[in-house]
Image (spheres, rainbow, N blue to C red):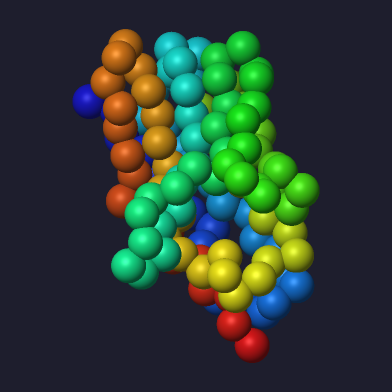
Length: 115
């Protein structure tokens, strides 16, 4: 059972930046895909960004310009850098991993963008 633990959420003012980190309980070399999704109240969970085992990255709609994803296989982590944050970025951000055909989710970390 893979465990994913997110960290780095919090309250930030509009225009600010945050870095989220997700630590996996086993080697990320064996994980096909790691990524970040977000879910705002009353909305569906949506892709923010994901990185494949070969380093290929994919971003959700309108995410690539302000968000960046990176994966460190030596630390078993995947990070999400978020810049120029807007109130509409407020959501619970979830880490996702796919390993041997099974999808795992973290518990989520709250990001609130507000003045």
